[in-house]
Length: 285
Image (cartoon, rainbow, N blue to C red; front, side, top):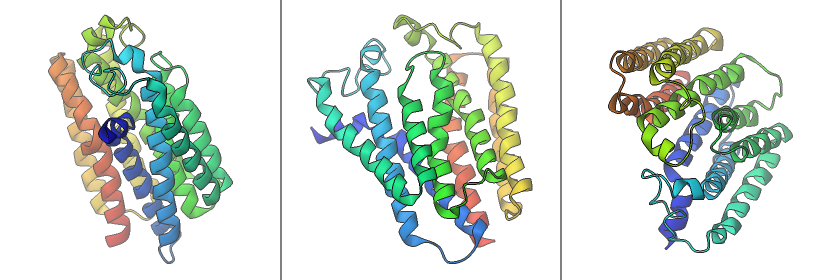
């Protein structure tokens, strides 16, 4: 069925990446001033959609054997056997990846390099300790593509650096809380890499530190942007306090339920709202 093939592309994860990439482009337009680049924006959204969907589809394909061993993922299209043989998804994935990279090249050579590096990072060393760190590179690619496609300035400035720092703090916080919430599921599939190789309490202390780093990156964006206002700062401080509270609650009462709450909070409610309010603040105020 068509829905089985669409599910291979992880539509929820892809939607978040497209959303923050689009928001980055809108914020970049506000930063440089002038008329909003409608044609460029549409191209950015299509490029990120194709690239992110293709990358997510590739990771689903590469993870299919391990996913089949886990209760949380065994019902996905590939591990459940709803698509047989699994390689039937590869042409679709290849077309999306190539389309995303081709459109990134049209945007600029810098966007192409960012997209290519992000694509490679998402696919190598799956289900290992390195997966999260490569995930930082892959997860920051849409935001950086959105920014550099609009500014057309390859210089490394404060905003793209802070965007990367935000994703760098967010990614392990998001991934590791999911792993803690489903520790037995991962271990049952034979996965024992970090953070599963550490006692829960040590990992949760690290997560609390990451929540502070995430908050700091979000707040620094306000002070170093030069164009954001009180709305962004207010919402970011409130969301950061909520994230730190959830992390401290997990530290006080370490269990799967509280780890799952931090995981869910870190997805759209935190990252999505931060980027959404950044757009509203930079264009309305």
